[in-house]
Picture: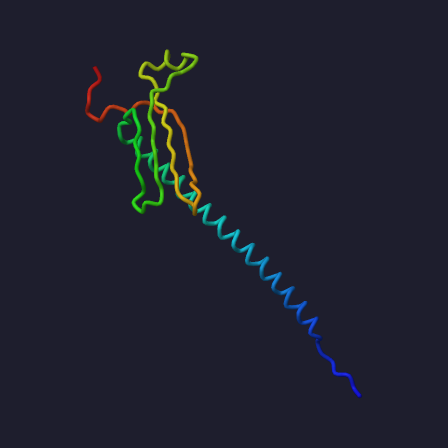
Length: 136
């Protein structure tokens, strides 16, 4: 009687279990990579939106107060706070009679159930006079 060669049922079950484990690990890595890419994309878009709002503030007079808004696609919400900056040492105020404005910008968005945000803070000079105006 010759013995037939082949795989036993246990060997097949073990091989399927190993393939399932390897596939699960690959899908887990791919899922994490996708989430990281999506987060990076949203963060980069928020930074670009904050930069755009900051550049816009250079061409328009900055009004002291709070301004809010959102992107046209409603994906990002922004808040800009402008306040007169008070130099704790008094050195800058004595050299610059017009004073400086503190501008805080925050762009936020939803990432699933979590709110994410990007914030900046800077000092700006008050907006220059419009072209053609005279200084007394």
